[in-house]
Image (cartoon, rainbow, N blue to C red; front, side):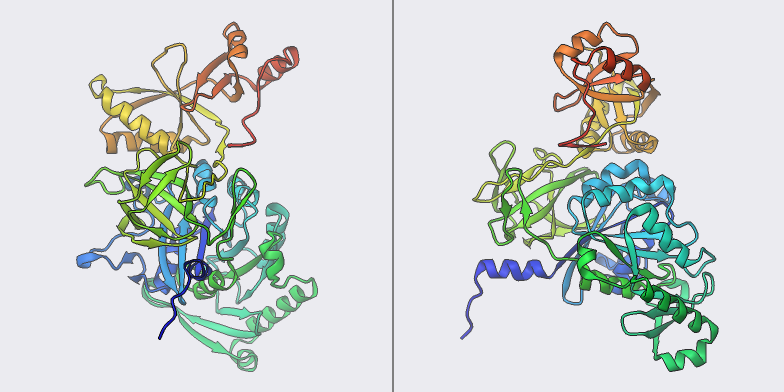
Length: 533
């Protein structure tokens, strides 16, 4: 006779099997390739780059958007769930370009750890430091992967110094390369002193052939390459650069792995580290400072909204990170901002652009709620006991452009797309409270405008003309200050959809002068709750 497992114990047990992490990198470091190879090693794809899809269809998994495939870069985040070693892995692939760092920040709000991918030839690039700073701002544990070691590159010891100096994390190599960049033989596993030698497979389409050798055999067969690796590993021992789980979880050190995603070298070591080192979901703190236990009734928050993932249906999906309890499709939840009931009849698990009906989910999982038009990024959903999680921050805009429909006959389509793309966080849309009908788009980077225009034309059938406007900096303001600013040259006050007033200035130096001359005016930096500098 079997005994039933209590519901709260089942939730805790399932949560302990979850590993939810994001991958961050600068463009062309190999992040998307690594994502595909994780799926290969987990058995989620038959060969690299193709999903085991219905009726033999083959789909690219992570870069599913047309513009991504044209440009060869990731411009939107992707959710992929698969199983590995009896664990449920939720992989959140993020955009690589700094222009989309706001989307990366939203995704990191749903992650419990991150993998930082670096090109061994380029190291830490200045243009993408913002992505890593975003990760550090959330105090997430970070694993590091030195990628493309099969190609010529920089000395790995030099890269360790660079990571610590620029990122602020002390790298602690778990594996170390045998052979120089471009002549990659395998890795010395510093945890047991053994040598793992790799052999290529055709086009990297299947798992790399791995051969584990003991130190004695490695000396004979690899000679100077093995000896150099041993000497460098000894140096790392002397300076204390060894794997320490406590400091990793505290966000002070970063376990480092070396390999090549293209050839699959070192991928298994890194995926094993996800299971062994990435922490399972933990209880989250609400806005009132109380902690929501994992086994409490269901709660979760929306961290991403994406429209037109399925062009045949033209729908949109709200991605919800489960924080506590068990999710059952069809359950009625409470929408915390409004207090209204919310039905979850149309719930799906997401795998790139593919989705399937999901019946049950646990803390750490991501649930896609289809056509949930009442949800906004940052909204909390809960069952039974009320809770609200902190809002997801937005970034201070740095670039501004006006937007008009190229064809006035497509006015409705233009505004429908404008509303949807703002909901997704593609751009911020600012309107003139005094009645000027031409909206102003605000963004962190120029490529956000390119994505906006492309999606507006291809998904909503409304081409737009974008014109840059001369503003350089924005500040939060109020009605009283707005009345003063109307008389000031080189300024303009616009409103966000939530009613927040933003004062735009053509020159940061002019702003500084106004702040000095009128200290009683409200000109607050866009930082603090709900924003990131």
